[in-house]
Structure formats: structure tokens, C-alpha cells
Length: 230
Image 1 (tube, rainbow, N blue to C red):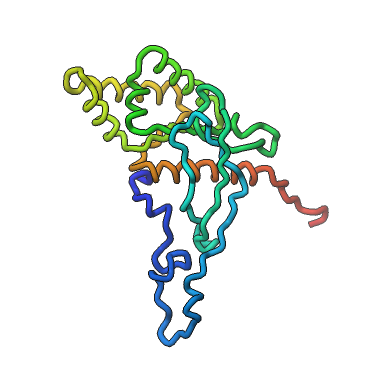
Image 2: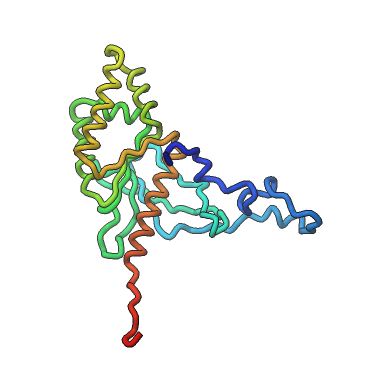
């Protein structure tokens, strides 16, 4: 499954690519070059949209070190991040501004970040804490795309729940497991993305927002039509 691949598969270029750095590239036999040319940094690409991180996000992503694809020679991407209030129970990340049809991106796509301890505390929380999260899931379920992005695998979250529980063996893990299953079925449009680590989760959030933005931009382009008589 794709979420089990190492983050390096998404963050870093192949060793023989221009972006890999001079220490990882070998010139062809007999090739003469300027000794300083190899140390030229690739020109960065400014991402054409801005990401909004909620002001209440305690550990916001910087989205640094993410690279373009091979067609752009793995050049580094520069991501503009804006800290704004997204409202209570309205997730942590979205895209700034309106989509081509005028609808704010914040109404179309939203991603909620969870560390492992936060995921355990939220899912097993009681009273207002749990109710607030269920209210957020209900709101997320109304977006075009929404996800709960956890900085750990599901098995790690279950293990953390057991380690923190004062109840008998297996009780906390069972409660967490069944709560997630219930919410996945009750709110089927909310994706749960279990990531190997924080860096993978950061890249996932960026790529999800990037693909959504690209899709909206592509769909807004007028469709070419054949001229009369052709």
C-alpha cells in the first residue's frame, strides 16, 4: 500500500538527478567542467497557491524540503503558509482564497492533523472533547475532500492507547479501534490517513492540497471545441 512506502520515495530525487547534489553525481569519463558549476543550487519553484494553517495548530508544518517532479528536474518547492483562524472544529489545513467558481477553498477541502498522543486523547476522550471532534467529523464529511492525517500507523496509535490506559489489557485499544470504525462508516467522506511518521504526514498534506488545487484549476479551463465545418 502506498502509505507504507518510505518518505524518501516522495521527498528526495534519485541519486543521479540534478537535484541530488554534487556529492552524489559523477561526471562522464573525460568530461571537463567548471569546478564551481556543480555547486549551483537549482532554482526554486514558487508554489502557485498558499496553504492556510489554523492559528490554533500547535505544531504547524513548514512544508520545506519538498521537491518538484522529474519533469521540473526535482527543483525545490517554495510553499507560502498563512496562519489564520479556520474556525472552531474546522480542521488545521486548507488552501487560501477562492476556487475558480468563487467558492472558498476552505469550504471545499480540509485536513486535520493528529500526532499519536493527540489522536489517542481525542478518540478516547470523554465529554466535550470527544463531542467537539465528532462535530468536526460531521463538518468534514460535508467537504469535497477531507482527511484526518495521523502522524503514526494505526497499530502505533493502538499501542499508545494501551500504554496510557489504566484499564485492563486490550480495553483501551478495543475502544479506540471500534470508535474509528464507527466514525469511518458514519462519516464515509472523511479519509483516515495513517502515516509512518510526521514527515510523511507533512508531505501527504501538501500533496493532497496540491492535487486538489490542480484539479480545480484544470476543470476551470474552457473545453476546446471544433470549428464549424471541421
